[in-house]
Every structure is written in C-alpha cells, then in structure tokens.
Image (tube, rainbow, N blue to C red):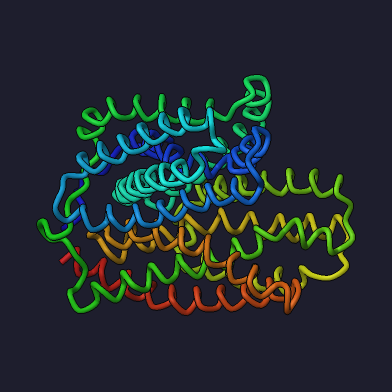
Length: 394
C-alpha cells in the first residue's frame, strides 16, 4: 500500500497543524497588518497591494513545492521555505523603517515571503494527509489557524500602536520560523512524506491526472465562492441598512462561528463520510446566498452570515480529505494550496470588476455559480475515492 500503516500519532498531527499557522500568519491577521501599514503612512491601496503580492507568491509557492516534491526530500523544501520566510521578514522589518521610499522593493520581498509560505503550506498539508483520520487532521489545522487569527487580531493592534511599527509582526513570525527550522530533524522521525513515484505511489494510472485536476478545480471554485461573499460581507450589510457600529459587532460574532465549524469537523471526523458534509454545505450555502441581499435586519444578517462561515470552515477539512484519499501521491493535496489561493483572489476580483455595472447582485450570482461548479467537480471524486481505496488494498 502507498500509505504506511504506521500513521503519525495524534500529538504529531496536532503539532503539525499548529505549524500550519506560520505559512498563513500574515493572512490570518490581515486586517491588523494592513491597518498597521496605513498607520505608518502607507496608502490603503498600497497596503492592500502588499498583501495581494504575498498571496500571489503563496499560490506560486504551493505549485513549486508540488513540482519539487518529486525530486527533493521534503525536509529540503521545508528548510528552503523557512529560510525564505525568515530572510524575507527580517528584510521587511528593515525596509519598513523607510517604507515610502522602499515600497517597490518591499513588495518583491513580500512575494518571496509568499513563495516560502506557499511551499511550506503545501508540505504541511501533504503531511496532514498522511494521518489515519485526515479530515480530523485538517480540521485541527483550521481550528489552530482560526484560533490564532482571533487572538492575533485582538492582541496585535495594541502592540503595534505601542511600538508605532508593524515590525513586531515580521519579528514574531521570523522567530517562530527559526524555532520550526531547528525542529525539522525531530519532525522527520515522526512524519513521513513519500515522494510521488516512490513505491506504490498513485491511484489507478488512467485516473491519476484526472483526480488531481478535479481536486484542484473543486478547491478553486469552492474558495472563489467563499471569498466572493466574505470579502464583500461588510458592504452587503451596509447596503442592507445596518449601521456601522452594529456591523463591527456582528462581524466579530460571525468570525467566531468559523471556529465552531472547524471544531465540529474535529468532533464529527468521518462519521458521516465526506459526501454528506460537502454536498450539504454547498446546498445550504446556495440557499443562504440566495437570500443574503437587499434590505436585511441585523439579526437576519447575523444568522445567515454565521451559517455561511460555519459551513465554510466545517466543509474545508473534508475537501482536503477527499483530495488526500483520491490521490495517495499527495500531489492533489499539495496543489490544493495554489488552487485555493487563486480562488481566494479570483472570486473577489471578478466581483470587483462587475460590481460597478451590476451591483451587489453579482456577489450572489458569482458565489452560486462557483458553488455549483465545485459540486460538479467534487462529485466524481467520491466514486474515485472508493475505486482508489479498493486498488490500494489489493
């Protein structure tokens, strides 16, 4: 069989999930990061461009890691990724002292950080896919990331305000990456990531490329839909007649429902399989998006947006688990990183382009179409999962 019978233990899985905070560090505290840049004199648009540049590098980095995994040991990729993140963030701290004069250079440095983060995220996701209960492993990852996001958004604003600089973000991330850098030799004893092509490495050959493409498309369409709604949620509330003070409070509560969704996936694991959680999520989210428009009462907005966010973080671990099952080589899981990165970017981008002409109804249309396409992409994988499992046990 491709997967070893010696699965990583629960502690190893949880520690790997916690390590998954590092590649997503800046994105998880994005509002604080962008706000901190604005406070030191960077224009809002330019601060957003820095984050977008890093997200673009993140998507490319995930793709590069997938390609390199065929030829390099995973430890080598992790060392290179961490080095890029450490050097990039220390350089960012240096450049931020005169950010207006060095903005263009800083943008390229953030791209390099994104490349390292995307590569590291791909390896961590492949490692988690080796767990005996992969949906629970990915739920741990989401829970850790969302918990850090809530804590970071709460703590960092005061720290940044006290220091008068966003450098603390760069230094904290660099320090944590240094710790992980020196922990890699110990991780290698408990985590095994086999290169694609080694041993019994893949699903039935004629389906190998197909399942990888379908997995990537599923992630792309699903995350396009999620972020098309999420990125414009505040505007939907404003246009619905909700006051600015209420919106802030409501969004804070809505953010916590993501934690609940990930926790539910941890507890439930594979008790309902993968098809039911995924298809139920898509069906209910389509219903939510259909009614999430126009004049809307604050409590109605809270309920609908909370359901949407809960299901997003509840469903995501199952999507990763399906990718892990249908392609034991790990390529589908690794390619999920650039696919979801592109989805997070493309969804809001299309909405932003069409918004001036069609109004907020375009949010609903784009999200519904993307969710339907995600369903069409993932349904063939449910059958392929059973075929692959049977092939690997023979």
